[in-house]
Length: 488
Image 1 (cartoon, rainbow, N blue to C red):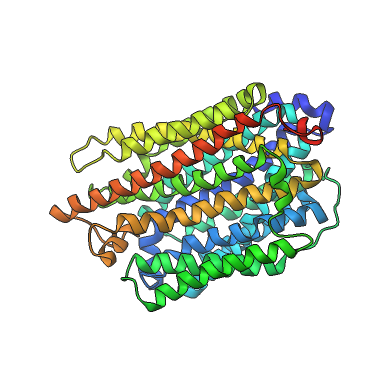
Image 2: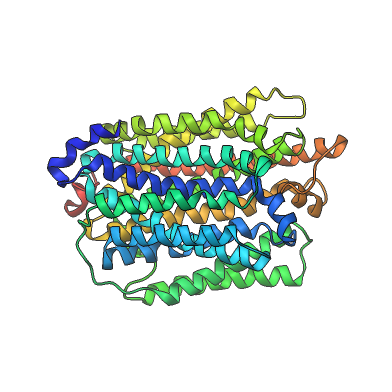
């Protein structure tokens, strides 16, 4: 399929299909790491004697670093070359993976995951900009659709390999498999990816990154603490302190010459709803994997491998639909495929919210297919909308901002899921079930499943908000200023 995109060689001067395959590989290995670790959390917790309240940071720490660095490493791509930064990301990611496989205690595994996140940020933030450099606007939607295959394949490999490796080998190999894949992709990237983007003189916004980092950390720490303890002075201090720092971040950004979040970008009509749709989609959907795993391994008592296999059809459908949705976005614009995709994910969440202790497991498969088709429709269309609306000289920043908004939603989605799902039974018990260190039986299982229903309904509300932002892009059609009309 990718070979069809080689028609663009006359435009780009390179084998664009092969170049896209390299970009897809980068997305694939970062996607693997967002799902594979979930199934290994209980084993890692026992093996490294990680405190129960800290094990969640093995995932959140990785996502938080990607969130904070996304715009800044995108800016580095504008300054020093997107391909160069993309390749550096591969190298750092492989190094972080190797060190994670060798981790010996709580501090080391979380610290090495942070290093891995730096590499992941360089890869994900620059991948969208590289595609924008390689393909003209009229063909980017289809290219982003193929890129979505990389994400879906990575997610499938993550959940399947995670189940197999944790069950039959060792949790350390969930990181070890990244090494040969990453090194192979790096060597191929050096050979086939052209550095076509023009260099731009930019400054890093260290003050902005520090203030938003402290703000997000404070709020996340407070929320995750609420999952295991009741509200107390310490938790309240983290929550309020985090909110204050986020406010300081807004003030700082208004005074910076080159802020972390370039607020001028929001003057482009189609860009603002696209970024907000990405934020709320991440907030409403990223928790779904964890909630479903909680249901399958908790109340239903399935093994990690059997639980993961039920979710494979959804990811496969997402990968199949991605190129078609991207092509549709090229022809009719992003509003219809992106909004329809979000509507499909709302349906999936509704089905998940009906699951109980006697539900047929085929319902999980049906819901996962709806969710996969929805994601496969939304991501390429929304990504294409952002990059088409962005000026070429801001491709790196725009791609980074897209990842920042999406990852901010993903980070808080995790904490949001724990907080709501833990309302029905004692918080420490719910948290233990969430990370897989305890199972449910009898009446407690029924009550906890009710808590999961509340979490799914909460995610539905967030997904509806995302769909509203996505649909609102239709109002701006034909009303762009001349400077941006062609790009949007």
